[in-house]
Picture 1 (cartoon, rainbow, N blue to C red):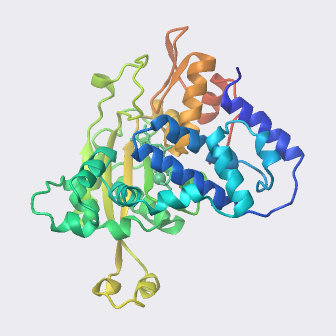
Picture 2 (picture 1 turned 45 degrees about the vertical axis):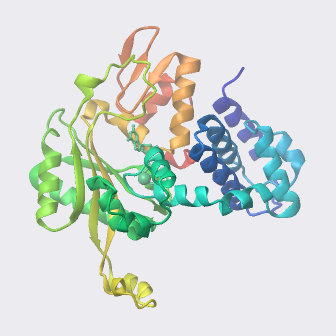
Picture 3 (picture 1 turned 90 degrees about the vertical axis):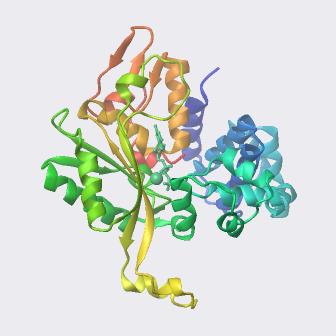
Amino acid sequence: GRSPMLLHISWFTECMAAREPVKIEPRHLLEDALETLSKEASFCGSDGRSLAFIRAASVLRSLPSTLTTIEELNRLPGFGEHSKRVVQEILEDGFSAEVERVTQKEKYQTMKLFTNIFGVGMKTANRWYQEGLRSLGDLRNSQKLKLSKQQEAGLQHYEDLNMPVSRAEADLIAKMVEEVAHSFLPGTIITLAGGFRRGKLSGHDVDILITHAQEGREEGLLSKVIGQLQSQGLILYHDLKRNSYHDAFSPDSKSTSNMDHFERSFSIFRLKVASHIGDIGARDHSPESSKDWKAVRVDLVVTPISQYPYALLGWTGSKHFERELRRFSCNEKKMVLNSHALYDTVEQKILAATCEEDIFLYLGLEYMPPSDRNA
Ligand code: DGT
Ligand code: MG
């Protein structure tokens, strides 16, 4: 059969042509419901079910207008019976009893709380839940719990890190990084990737790519940049991973791991915030309200220029778009796509790209600008 991505694209075009201005149900209500069920499924270890709900939510997101009738729903690709049932319920009653039940569950609430801690994955969250831990207070007060440095930082800055990062804050951080990078290596190219590149106005972190037009000049730059920012008191946490492309990566490996092998730093920046932002917090009278800084999650990723177009495509997201694109490459084109390269398994060669457009061309797809990749 045709790949969901192609179905999706052709259906989308069809829909744009028959655009109707009706609007009854706020679309986020439906998407949030499906996302809740997706989370719940992943908390239960059902990755397949989780993905099915993500797909359905992504189809809704790509609709030109809000869904209003169950008939429209029946024409949509990528909608399983369960997702359909939930959407139908909300369209008819304004809410879904199943979703309400899930959000009330203690396990769901606890898993959501714990997995929102920087450095805590599903396994750890589940273990803590099984041990009877329920709140951040429980984690902070536990005597026997052994937290990693990353989790400690995540717990310490939990509130800040779960506040959205604004576009202005992201730009400010990119500028800080650029200035320092230029002081060590003029001509360094800094790119704001992730959701912000797709035009989102806020995000959960700041994803920054670092490269240089001369291959190899970027090597060793990151530790200098971090060191400099650190000496200015701007880094609350950082974990530098060295480049492991050559020792751990083979382009035709069947590994499904999405982790890439660039030199990178998972960090938490200490960002000065304008006093009027602090004023919002001043309404509550906690000592925190006088704080004139905010902890922000920043990923710095260093890429050689030869891999930059792939890194840019891979780090622009969305996660779901990446997943669908990689699946399409593999199933329809017999090519393995990741953030380093595109590997043609038939010709058995790596395809070099100088820009994102080249990659879409290799895949036989029309170029999609970042703002169209929000699926
Ligand atoms: P948000 O939540 O507003 O930050 O939304 P995004 O879309 O910026 O999501 P984010 O920051 O989690 O990831 C941005 C893109 O970067 C996403 O498409 C996947 C990619 N990405 C994130 N972490 C990794 C990683 O460890 N390895 C690879 N290969 N890609 C990653
Ligand atoms: Mg991001």
